[in-house]
Image (cartoon, rainbow, N blue to C red):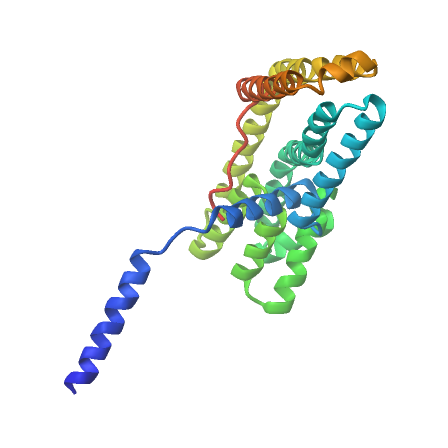
Length: 283
């Protein structure tokens, strides 16, 4: 009996120690997770982070080969390799931001549809499924998939989790969690809660649209300022004397310093001029 108690005590202490020393996911795992979420948000749900990595490598090699064939300079080709590799990620991030902005004005309509369905006597799962038939066109597929999941498993919480992951949208997280809370708590105030959420989302979308319109010139200025020197350098690099100058150690150092300065300046201007993107805190 004493031996059994000792074994149980040791197993309990071991489990306690492992739970306390639980480490967060490694950085590569977190990076892959963020890139997968970015692809879903941009509308490339079937793509994987490895596909994005392959696109970055292909774009970098294509840019390097093109510049090397035009100028014959290895230093300029290396700079083109780095810049070209950044293009696919920038395209995906831009698509994700545009998709978020387009959806932001649709969510109040979705919540109004849910409130109308609840007022008409539908349950919340039925109201969500109705959005897949009569809701905004860009969001119908996700809510139709929710209806299929709910019919297949019969568990609303699980279907809501899949809907939230499928949309990968901070506003969708709030809507889904509000619906989940309203379903669990119940009561006669569900319609009031949904109407309040709709008014909040509509006001938030209007405010962000105004600020983005006023500050868009800063972001455009950052893009022009960071691309102009490299376009001029590409034109000058077509001359053999300029290409030979950048093949030296000093030329390579100048390219590296210029690339670092452009990257830091661009990131600073974008950070100053662009509104912060909402984070998904309810995952």
